[in-house]
Structures are given as C-alpha cells and as structure tokens.
Amino acid sequence: MADLKVKLGPLSLKNPVMTASGTFGYGSEYEDFYPAKKLGAVVVKGIAPWPSNGNAAPRVAEVMGGMLNAIGLQGPGVDAFLTDKHYLPHLKETGATVIVNIWGKSPEDYALVAKRLEEEKNAIAAIEINVSCPNVKEGGLSFGTDPKTMAGVVAAVRKATTIPLITKLSPNVPRIADFAKAAQDAGSDILSLINTIPAMAIDVETRRPKIANVTGGMSGPAIKPVAIKLVYEASKAVSIPIIGMGGIMSGLDAIEFMLAGASAVAVGTAIFADPRAPLKIIDEINDYLNSHSIRSVRDIIGQVRID
Image 1 (tube, rainbow, N blue to C red):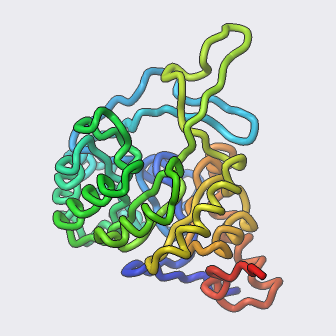
Image 2: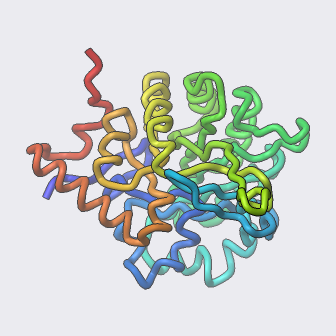
C-alpha cells in the first residue's frame, strides 16, 4: 500500500480525502455506512453565531452534469454545535479529524464564531472560512468577490483564534491568484477551492425555477475542469497548501486535482449519489499510486507537466 499521509501546513492527515462542507452533515448522518475517522477529515456544515433555518424548499435540483442547491446555510448555530450531543460532542467521540466551516454577515460575526471554537481547539483541527456569504454592510455582495474585504474577514478570524485557518475561495472572481495571495497575506494557513458556481434551472412544464430561491450553486462533474484550472492558478500564486474540490467523483478525479497543485481534496456531490464515495476514492488513489510505482501521494502534488 502506498503512503497516503499528507501535510497541510500545520495539519497532518492520514489520507488526502475529506468531505466538502454541506454534503456530509455533521458526520453522524453517515455512521451507518462507515466510521468518519477513516477519512482524512470531516468538514461540517457551516456554523454561524446564530441558528439558521435556511431557504424555502425545494432547495436542491438535479441537472445535467451535477446539481443545484440553495440550502441557505441551515445550521444549529455555534452554541448548539459546541454543546448539543449530536454535534461536536459526538464528533469528539468518533476520533475523526474535524474541520469546522464558519460563516457570518460581518467580519465580527466570523470572529465571534472563531473565538467560541477556540474553547474546543483541542477537538477542532482547523476552521474553514466560507467567504461566499453576503456582506450586509456592503449591500449583500459576497465577501469573497473583493480581495480587500475578504482579507479583512480572514484577518479578523486570525486574530480571534489560534486554530489553523482554511479560506474557501469563490470561483466567481476575475483572477483567483489575487484572492489566493490576499488570503495568505491575511493569515490563512491553507486554501480550499472551489465553492459552487451560480446557476439556474427551469421546469419547462410549470415554467418555474426548479428551486425556490430561483438561482443556486452548481456543483458536480460539470464544474471539475473549471475547478482544476483555478486550483492550478492558485497553487502558482501562493506558498500555502490547497484543498481542491469541485466535481470529484473518482480517485482519478482526485489525482487530477493533486497534479494541478492540490495537497488534498474534498468530496461533495458524489456523496449524494453514493455515501461511500469518499472511501472508494481513497482506495482508487491508492490503486493509482501502486499501479504507477509511486510510493507516496505527496510525490504527485503539483506534478502536472507543462511543456
């Protein structure tokens, strides 16, 4: 068996495969399929200072090459996440490596959540900052679409916690390199990309949008080439490690991201088609390495050949 261990800045993972936030709940939802500790890490659904019910249904629609979602960041809020037996207390019992995705409507919101998570820093491997949220102080524009504003969020979170930070970048920007560098300079230890791509689908019989929010985020295999390009460009712009995501359905998809410059990958939409997809992808990465006589998965990171 090949060596699947990877290092992401201050993080050491047993393998490079984790779940994408919002696709694996809080881990307990998938316990009947396999122990969460078999994964490199579990990234939980977004946590805010307050509980959120999310958007009205329907919130998900299957489309050619993937799916649309507009869940609306439904979650229990940071207080319940830290204390309710269904959330972090249960995850601590599983032995899984836990990464907590956070969001808010102002830099202060993000910092508040990070400060509360600091209370459990021994149980939380990293915080993933979702900067694709609306900045209410700037008329609802996403934090992640302006490098200065995004950097302000990262800096506020960095000041509030000693836990390693991952900044999850939006694909909806002119130059991903600018945002990658801004996040690194503001104190992010790791980057993750990409988040979903804005999209829309219409039911031609009812002539209504297929999701109640009208538009949503596109994920799945159709966005993989976009994600790989952005991972490649970001990896050339920064010195910190990258977690690649966007349409990973197989071990070969994961290998593609790692060749482009990702040190690890996150699996999302594939889990809805097959809950065991992350485990299969781990096995398929190992099979690829063995078949190519590659001893360590670390040896393929950033090794795409550009002649």
